[in-house]
Length: 468
Image (cartoon, rainbow, N blue to C red):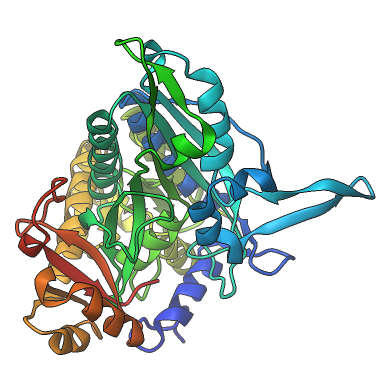
């Protein structure tokens, strides 16, 4: 009997099975919340560490702002509250007494951070002010799904203030490309379409939203990360102004950008197969699992020796010699959890002076001399990383169709992405797509790049898909 529901039979059920069997997460006691289990959190921690390093390399520094936001702050940015009000969680009682002013549990922090950007920005010499926050946020989801849409989730949100529009736009683009796109491609091995959102899909209060859109194993789109130019909308609402080099008072230009635990869901759906997770080696909490075939003292000792050598080589290694569990059960566990490489150590292998290396992505088994195992595994991990990216790219290309009519786009988007000149769709066509539960995921230049500000929209192409 199969451990997991086959993806082709029921993709959503397969996803739930993987969450449970790989011990990633489960539902919390309040509807829409989630408990992230240690293995799921280990994956998130590695995502967090890599993204954080990239954010710091881009010049931003970390800070922390309160979970509770005065309701009046959101009223000061009418576009902002209009975009989020259906999802807000509002606290009206504290300490057993009704609050003088209700407080909102942050759905995002533009408003409260805007208050402090105004306080800390006096002169052009204070800019750019580049802040990032790692936090939880709450958006009251009607149809929650673990990691993809939950009422509370973890994320980073960057917020910056700049002297002029060009500097703000350049920084928002830098985050979209150097932080998000590069991380998703180089570490998660998920190729993404990058572009800008249409006016209809743009973040509330933004003048421009850049997005990274990944294709999942069922052909649907997942928005993996976004970077927003906010113009002077929030600066105007929260008086973020400064004295310029000319001695005059100016409004700042601001940005915001974020990625979240949704990336864990994207990882599962982009790379998972009928045997469970497949985690790219650069991300994997455990890159190599060493499995003694038998509970034999000599075999287990050799397995631990191999594990130590691999650890000394700088790899993240687990030796799974749990007593009372069959070899088959331990193999299944390693496969479900997506550990990139297995080193199987059996008495016959050892008698021949070999061990067996097994790739999780292809299931290919390769006997190698025992003395060469520690030296061979790093190169094999690089092959698995490249293989997962190549496979995801092949899937995306095979399920992205170039079309010339909205009707053809509707048809193509039933199984993947449709690519079509934006001039053939426009806002009227976009409204028709919405009736079919389809959205324009992003607008791109014909060569797949982010459009430059002020370009001719008739020169752009759009990608249409069903989405999570």
